[in-house]
Image 1 (cartoon, rainbow over the protein chains, first blue to last red):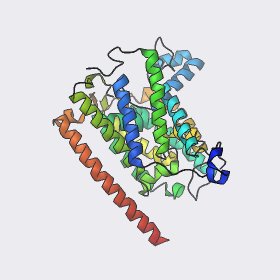
Image 2: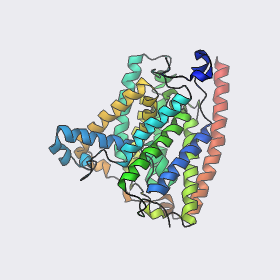
Image 3: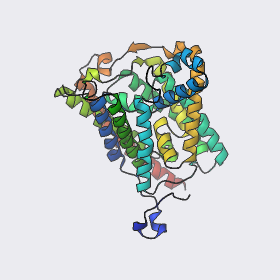
Image 4: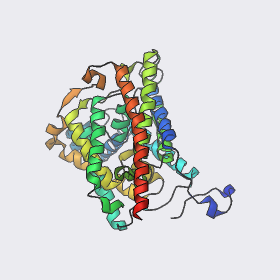
Amino acid sequence: MEPFAHDLMDGPPEVARAPRPYANPYLAGIGIGIVLLAAFVLVGRGLGASGAFNSTIAWLVSWVAPGYAHDNGFLAGYLGGDTHPLKSWLVFEVAGVFVGALGSGLLAHRVVRTVERGPRISIAGRLALAFLGGMIMAFGAALARGCTSGQALTGGALLNLGSWVFMLSVFVGGYAAAWFLRRQWR
Amino acid sequence: MIAPLEKLGWFGDETSLVIAFLIGIGFGFFLERAGFGSAKKLVAQFYLRDLAVFKVMFSAIVTAMLGVTYLAWAGYLDLSLVYLVPTFWIAQLAGGLLLGVGFVVGGYCPGTSIASAATGRIDGVVFVLGFAAGTLGFAVASPLLQGVLGAGELGPTTLPDALGVPYGAVVFAVVVVAVAGFAGASWIERRMAARDAGVR
């Protein structure tokens, strides 16, 4: 639980290391909304995350097995044609997400090397479920053609029919799974 | 019409990648501000202890939706040039259910897992690796999944199109539902806090 950085100007380390409270959810939401609106106005597209994984995996596979990547319909769509697969809007946007989150975390003393878990689960158990959850989510996002960022937020604001179907479905899936996974979190 | 600027030729691909990076910084900053680099904070949504996920998501949607609606109405933004993901409602219904399950199993969604990995969470890093492995798995399995991938295809469709009601009416309804939802969410949080206090 050692913070990577703290501001010496803030006084003794014990004080400086205490993580600051999170922002008001409505203010943070309005901030995300303005960023999303800026994306619409500047480039005519919204936020996203899962697409960056698709591009990265397509690039890695094309490196190891170029023939397979070009023959696979799903991967071929992310190879970028004449441009490099990583020269994509979402890859650069997700790199920005990493930098922006790190910056916010450093400013608020919330950058901590830790494993987030409930009181009743081991570290190994939590990490196994994190990996499994990521895998399940990758299938969900690929089927839905986007995730919470690309579909729920972006499509939600554009009143996209499929995005609203997706969003309601995410909450249904989450609440349905919550009871079975209560030992992980509570 | 002056926007979207890129679509109208104000700048090229290279500049748009720089903008993508800057937009991402803004997105990541506010995600972390909201506490969404923390799996416990995110998952509390599904145990009704902290409904910040709903509050942040809907205040973001309402903000961007009102901005887009105003700019289009005032003639500054050509909404037909803003990319709309095509609707495949059955695939998106199934994908949403899986994503919701994955959220509670793994503790993050793709965007928030990047924020959590950036702020040192090992579980966030492992989630990112799991998501990458799952993406590869989906790609390998995709020839077998064409049926479900294409299920419920309707093309790019908006809620006002599908319901046959004016755009403004749906915007108004979303605002009303969001505001009622915010009040309801805070009420649920107070009820659950009182119940937890009573139990212990």
